[in-house]
Image (cartoon, rainbow, N blue to C red):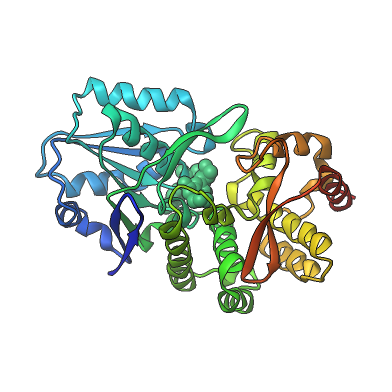
Length: 359
Ligand code: NAD
Ligand code: GLY
């Protein structure tokens, strides 16, 4: 079991990563000095069907262990499900010393974390991620839900007390979800580490090369990059926004298609391709757009999806991005592999590139 520390201004917490480490959940709860009066596990239907009994088994000597199962997918990040979690917690007498365990992917992590951040003004929670994508979402303390007018628009910065990432959970993850999560790994390489990018590019050229053993090391590296950014700027006053590389268009695609109709990582992959093309125009240099396009295509990302989406509508959604300032769209641009910056980009340029990629 490898332990890294995630250090932010508000909290320092351990990240445990390895195979089969879920069995240490009780000792980890003690290690982070929690002695909860009750525990609420929040999970989704699919993850629950695979793993809930195992977790409940670990807690058989504890009293007051509850679980609440939410629907699978993005639709669970809704005000409705959020409210139901609170109702369940209140009905079962959770109190200020209770602990919430988020068992699932990014959806459960974001939702359960937001419930924890708001229940009686905040109770501790532990992230137990079960997807590749959640290597990103479980670290850094962004928790929240969607509004029908914009993704992740209701939320908080609220750090977990620990992150326990058991790689064995990934054995049941369908390939499409592995690919989705790998997009965020690619993102971490592009924003920060050229060598890491070349390692990914040279090792993973076909879907079947996304093996669990390769993913474990890539995930660890991705988490360290995320942790380093978050430790410098927990509340996104500046630097942290680079983690949104690919998300301006990515979130717009998710919003336009309706939450859950495209995976987050697939949308971010297309958003990264778009950001690379925009960067080539802004910096007037060749960043290898076609190489990225071919690579993403081979891995199965929907590289031609913009042909089916109305550019004007996507621009409207992009204007709802949290980085927008005084109506100007600001995007994370790739200056070179491993280095990004945030720049305002004119609507005219953004539209022309959407139209070009949609041809
Ligand atoms: P998800 O949580 O919906 O999981 C994807 C699917 O995989 C679901 O159907 C789930 O039931 C299933 N699943 C999960 N674990 C499984 C397992 N081990 N075996 C089999 N099936 C499993 O989606 P996700 O891609 O993990 O997360 C996406 C969400 O994360 C988005 O809402 C996104 O906004 C959010 N996100 C948040 C942050 C952050 O910093 N908070 C960062 C990136 C993404
Ligand atoms: N995924 C963006 C962030 O954590 O800031």
